[in-house]
Length: 112
Length: 111
Figure 1 (cartoon, one colour):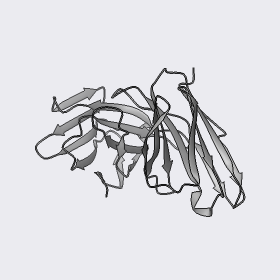
Figure 2: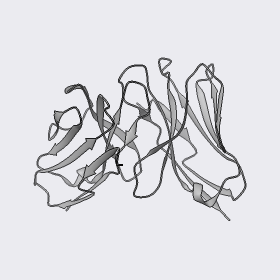
Figure 3: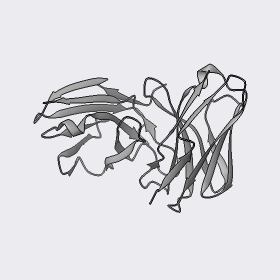
Figure 4: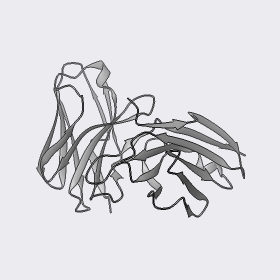
């Protein structure tokens, strides 16, 4: 049973455009929602994270939008650049030492 | 400074062999994990260790066994390797609900 559903599976965006990746979850006990970025041959690295007490968090060109009632959250990448081409994973976890549960990933390609 | 390190980076071996992957973190975290990433990039939790105790053991074959000699290390032992074990294995560590850091991964290829 997949606890975090991520879409789309792949995404192609023009340079300068907006990339949007969506995730949905079922477990209402989740209280931490990070996004990870993974380049080929590397481990996933934290990009940005949000907790359910806020509806939006912005760091540079990256924004998380969070809708608690709909149990959805999304990543927006503004002014997408070729260097943003990577696989992006949403994740969620509950309080305590529980491990992150990951979505299946979105392969983003930003073309010039 | 490497926060989470794994060795080896690549591991090629024959079916039926036994192999180990080592993981070390220098972040002072109290929980460490092993994830398996398959060819479709799906990241699946395998094990987690907190204060030297196994707290989660997902439905992985008992050929896989985590060993934690101390809080900074979590090694993964795999017995009787099978073709389906070929994947990239990531170690990760975390303190409470803070950021989870991943190692660079070990690409295991079973021939």
